[in-house]
Length: 101
Image 1 (tube, helix red, strand yellow):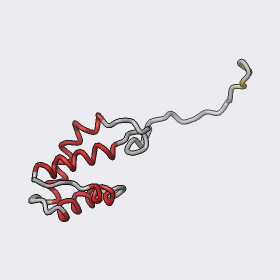
Image 2 (image 1 turned 120 degrees about the vertical axis):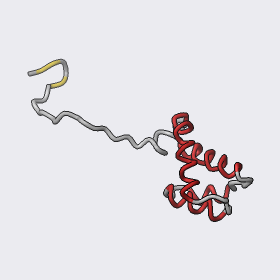
Image 3 (image 1 turned 30 degrees about the vertical axis):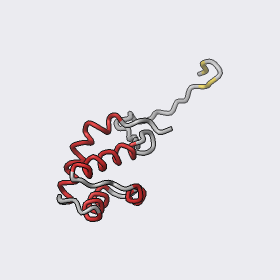
């Protein structure tokens, strides 16, 4: 059976039930948002999140970032509390993340 310049296929595919998108860092520039969240938490405790530390945190897990920032900047909170604060901020800040250029 033909329709226009293409021939229709008789193949049958299973119904698509799920779709996975890798938005974080691929479609969305979430890195800048994460740095802003960390800067905000650090400022709250009178600390500065230096550029050198930001560079070192690139590509690390959330657990490792929280642990390292709390330890190296000597924040007066636990790693878990730091993680809780970033998660709380993420709900409002990540939806506003810009698209990758």
